[in-house]
Length: 193
Image (tube, rainbow, N blue to C red):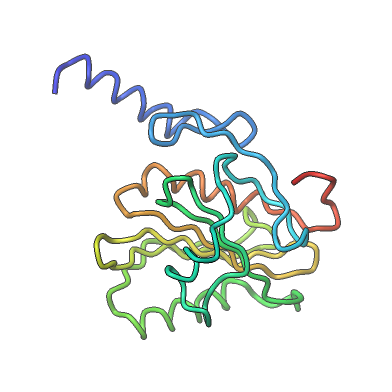
């Protein structure tokens, strides 16, 4: 690598890792990615997501997810490499999201020893004191970065997940965490899409 290429690469990494927010946009894959608030799950929630994400077509979601475990709504990048998925879990009964996520973790690791736990978080930074679980999961062609969250807003419990190839984890992880932190309950949604 030439010296000027190394400088350009370092600048891109600094922009990605330090600069930006959901309002102004974030640098992902060396390009500015803009975000907009969208209603999901028939307006039950509002969350920021990349403007470029589109609803995953039914035929593609049928190929990627088993019917029994398919999320209610799935959005994907135009190149299909990253996706966000959402499912309602019902009314929030005031349970402990961290305990629920720990149970999910135990089931995942029990069923598939190939998962690698990257980190877990719970608490104040997440809507409703939610919980996060980040995994590296094996794939047929390449490993996947999976970030799952149990979040609460407007008295409703939501399971949200973000997936991308593991090799793109550094590009997407910060944005995915900010997306989950942006969750709002439907009762405060306006006329936005």
